[in-house]
Length: 314
Length: 314
Image 1: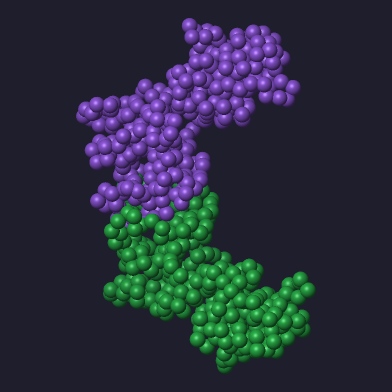
Image 2: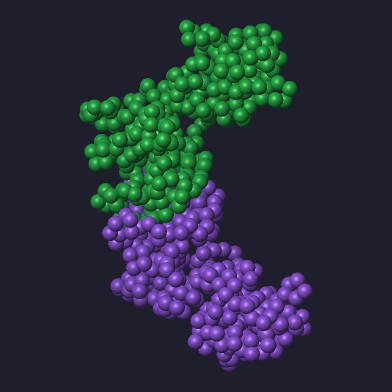
């Protein structure tokens, strides 16, 4: 199942509006086929894997990161029917599909056809791999990543606004890779006016992945940009990367709309520079604790990247 | 030699005004004795190790982190003479002693007595282990460690000054251990007035290690404190820990008098809080790069400690 979950990550962010799912078909201890949701959301992961497996699917075990769908559409048959038709003997499922058209109906249909079904295997990991789709599906809002690039003393620029360059080549390239993994990127008005950022993905082969550009403003947005009035006013995006500046970052944190923090830190001291954040509405230091959990930490050249995830109930 | 260097660290900070040296005596592939400079500076590491080795020193190899001294004093004989008298066959030395009373004379005396001498083995590591003594000896100033305890966004307190607590128990205990390893601690006037810090070592068994207390001020110091007018005005201390606040930290950085940075970071966001540093005289972002090298990084509970060392020529 760990492999199926890893495969599911390959579907991001192109699978929207459908969930990014991974599927692995195994028989006699050997991997027969792999699949993940294709760009635009179709074919589904199971359809890709079954097509690759061909006759080898008969009597095999399919591992899927999300319950196979129970609803046919004009764009393809229901995956639960496809698994039955292929003669799969056993289906192992990570997370149950919260879509009301499936939500247990996929499992039931497989069982009715005499297929052995095991579910809730690595469900939390699978949901984490589908976090953008899951967050929008369950909460009607995007999964938000906030990126901060600072000096050791937490500055995002010198007092005069100079910020080229705090972090090094490898950290900036990683930032472009993160852009490619998001549906939309947002900056605040100050950053747009000061830096006129292109927000393109400047990585060979990934230029086409440049995401939608949002501007946090009460006013109008220039050509090529979409204006959003508040962090709460974004409903039509699965994954959002907030790139700055301090005003936009603080607005999303104050609204508790940040799910993941990317902290790039360069081994330099600036002193008296611009702070990464303004007021985020913290009433007491004690309230600040227990909200962020370190998920990853790595060196990118001489810079460090720490990834924190918001610890939320349920 | 790595063991001798590690032993030398045990002499800190009590060996002042003498260098903290480590000595290992090995014969037939077995460690026969270990020694390090004792509190107050005597006995020297070699004397401790030779006393422990007894007759086993005859024909043995002695590893010492600093050239054995060539000068006898009222407090003890010269270590080079003691090694000769004990019948040691071979002496391996890390760093040469810059003290003009020795400075090669210890090596020469050993060689004249027919002892095989190998020197400059792990010299940089040995000098690093003796950094406080070495810095004062060579530059007439203390080796300065700056401690900063911040949130992820680089704040040392909320806007109202509240800073209890940003870091957790384990990070604070580590801070007390660092205090015990320094001869003196310094704070600025604002920190003294606001926090009235005791700066004691609050660790069981180490209470007696509480260092001398310095106050960075142009005025007078209260009882129990010594006033120093500037970072450049401290000559009689080997190792200094600067604990805060932002004014004192910035003054030492602006004077380029910080050799080592201790950065404790708690996984919290404060937003709009007090910055760790004020102006440190940085004219250009490019000048900020290449000054700090990551020497250690570890988790202390949910806090991270990063240790950086100032990259200096020579």
